[in-house]
Image (cartoon, rainbow, N blue to C red):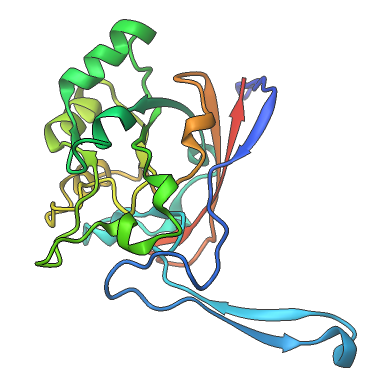
Length: 238
């Protein structure tokens, strides 16, 4: 049997991952990011650091076992599943006025009216404009006086539609959660991760991507039974 071959044509490669340092916005309760110098050039002849961070820190991918007891860990993702087509839905204009906005089925159909039906296996990236708030933790989480976070995400009905009717390969967003900040049920995460699909959070540079045609290359740490992993996400832009 001949293995099928795939050709990717691209003109640019764009980082979709933030640089990791100790000042990145951290989800409440997540471990702090730490760097410790282990070896110095002047003393040891080489430079080496040890680092520590949570599996869902910075730009990261979530695995099914983070929301389902029967789910696989990040180490079980096949290499093929980490090279995927992506489309981008831009809701920046709306989120400027309504920070709690959640993507609707109507938004999806409007996008499809302009660009065509979302192809099976695609990762749906939601550009909310939140990447511009990354270095201001107060603005990024946008908490009210009760501590409730206010940032946009995917409506659960829209997610169900994408999973059932479009057979998507996953979702991604430039906020700290594919679920809106007020949603503590993690509905979109749970729906998408019923199978080992893609959930990417804290992306950046989504404004540099076209609405369709991009291929994502998602680099992970193959942590055994990992609930997720910091991710190096590259966009191959046609």
